[in-house]
Structure formats: structure tokens, C-alpha cells
Image 1 (cartoon, helix red, strand yellow):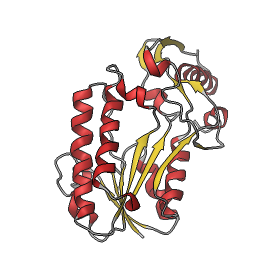
Image 2: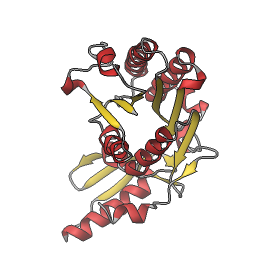
Image 3: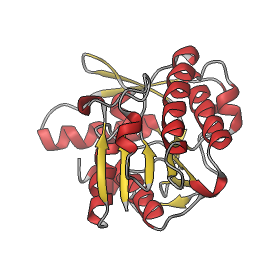
Length: 249
């Protein structure tokens, strides 16, 4: 198959592209550096020409509900329009595994944007042409969500069933290769929280560098993030544990 991956140079996209190519697919890597901007619509339709599958891996991390909803609304609509212009083309969307209450919290603007993204795709894409791939949080996001202040590391206390981004990409590539449709949720084999993962990551890095370990301080969160709001109820699970991932860091 020919597959267009939008957001091909992002954290997830750059893992997914080689996974798809290893399975024998021709991949069009679409991103702003190649002249494709899904928010403005520039180059989106052209990048879809000849492709059997359009994959949306585009992302913007923000806690602002307004920014998240605007970003994911514009991006989703431009990709669904490109799919509609090419009859028979299917769409695979990278989303996040979260329960409805997570998107209902006013403190979680990003999840409101992702909920909007899912609604747009489900409304504008026929069921038989849509794969909604909902991944639990990735181990790698710990660094992204860490605030550094000298030897201190402040990390939100989010209860997660995290997995490695390479594992999520592998599982999505397998689903696309198998032409699966519907909704798939994936997660890691352990339920933990970002603070615990951050502490283990700090210990691993200190040990490898022979340096003093940074002190990790958890930032309490209110609402669904402190409970099971991000824990998928029945996901497909990766076998890679936190310890196994840490050995590759």
C-alpha cells in the first residue's frame, strides 16, 4: 500500500514511518518541512494523491482548551477533506486513551482537543474506512512534562499505564498493515504514575553518568488524572516494562 503519514517527523511519526516501510509499504512522509501544514490545509490534498491510507499523527501539546480545540479541529478537517477527495482512501488516527471524564474536566484542555478530533473523524469518515488508534501515554513523555529547576525535577502525578513510543508505533503499524478498522486501545503492562517513572529514569541516568541523582517532586493533580481517567479498560498490551525501556535509555 501507499500510505501518507501526516506529522511524520514528530515523536510518534518518526517511529511509525520506518515501521510501515519495514512491512513493505510506500510511505509519503508529510510534515511542515515538506510543505504540508494540516492546520492551514497547505499541501494536504497533494500529499494524499495515490495513497490508500492517510495517517494522522499531527500533534500540539497545550493545556489551553481553546488552542487544542482549534488546532485539532482544523487539522482533522483538512485530512478528512483530503480523504473525501480520494474515494476509497481509509484514515488511521493517532489518539490518546482516556475516559470521557478526562475530557470533561476544565483543567484538561488538551484532552478536550483530542475529544473534538475524534468526534470530527467519526462524523466525517465512514466507519468502514476509519481506524481510531488510542494509545496510552508514552514513557518518553516524562521528559516533556518535567519542569527542571537546578537539581529538582517537578513532575505531575498522573496515573498511567504507559508504554514505549516504539511499541505504540509497532502496534499501530501492525493494525494498519492488517487493514483493521474501528477503535483499538493500547497500553503498557504496568499501571504506575509519571512521578515513579521519572524517579526510576533519574536513577538510571545518574547511574550511567556517575552523577548525583536529580530529586523528583510530584505535583498533585485534581480530578480524573489522579484516578483512572487515563487508564484504558481493556487495551492490547505491550510486553515492554518500564525496566526494559530504561535499559535502552
